[in-house]
Length: 532
Image 1 (tube, helix red, strand yellow):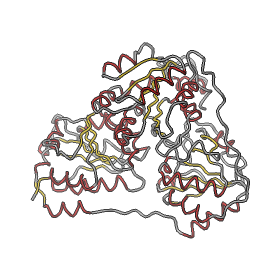
Image 2 (cartoon, rainbow, N blue to C red):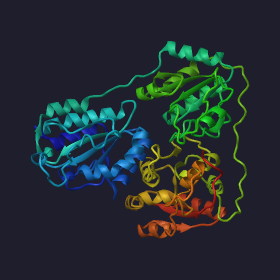
Image 3 (cartoon, rainbow, N blue to C red):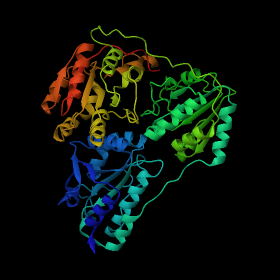
Image 4 (spheres, helix red, strand yellow):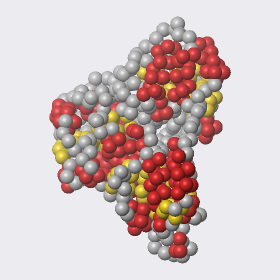
């Protein structure tokens, strides 16, 4: 016989869950006592930061990550960040402490009365095992579920006295040895049918998203686009990039409204959507999405997404495998190659304060091709995507659920997952305030990343949306008087303020060569027009 605690750590090892992001409380102490030497505990000072770091780490590695939260208060505080993790399909295995079983029926402090209900609907599965002996099986099941398509967070609530109970060692060994294989490749019949439709189409187009953001996904998308001479768009509001944005076939990022997507896709008779949601909207702008003769086919591994798509057909499959199979199946197209997509207009780099487009253009001059960019400057995200070319898989991350506080924690997680890759987080000064304690973790674990804070002293995206709605007299949109540089220095971060494009480029170049975290504050003026 072995203890539940020993069994749990054996389960964690078998799934390579040896990096733990957490913020512990009293109900977690029995789990963490005599912490194993082959595990790493990454402390965050607030639960939103903890989940944000784990989210970035999971997305960058493509593997499950263990997150340690504190009963109901910890889970509740983490749920803003969990919105992003769920939308990004990050495979997080969340453990939440619980009071001892003898106190679960009474009004004891730190009892979570409905632990499986609290995190819904942001987790794929939540459970509190009925007996201590069921804890290992619950943890094993959670690890498998987190990785099964569509991937996503799961949560196990664990009473603190369960860890000392005994379980059968042979049963645990069997659980740890179990593996679940996924085979979702499209059939030959499906591939042949799609290949025939692409060949017969007058003007097919490919829309890509986060589901293709891997070396295999990029290779498959590029191969199909080149072989079939397809123009390629980045689907609306996708949190990651599924295609090299400097490729001649790349046409740009689709805006998040029906009317503007309809105009962009006008004339295309076959729209193939792979690894993206069809579609993510934000403002309601009525309009015809597709022409009368246009067809849409969605390739997705998410049954719910396949069922809820608002038009066209859906094929439930691995989108990467589907594109790779199509690239091998189709006959090379005789149609002309698509014209290169639009490139951004030149920007004035001498203006003070800089426009956001100028700030991104200055950063683009010195960012290495292999850099990973985490963008949470919501009002200027379009400028970011216009000015900076994404040249490698895993080169772009944004908050999938639009919950603020993602940028700095996620960048820390990405850098910890890929310590040899340059990582830059660009955040607005409003969004930065949601996760300031993340700077402590960056310093504590000597995470070499650069945080660029675009300072405009307001919630610019809300002002933009206010104007779109035609509203006046809206309070709460100004946030002046925050000294971001002083905040960062208070946490031990190297921090400076720059005014011009040349200063920004120099500061960014220097920060990329410097160990540890650096923060650069940049006063900025306007963005390049409305999002809507």
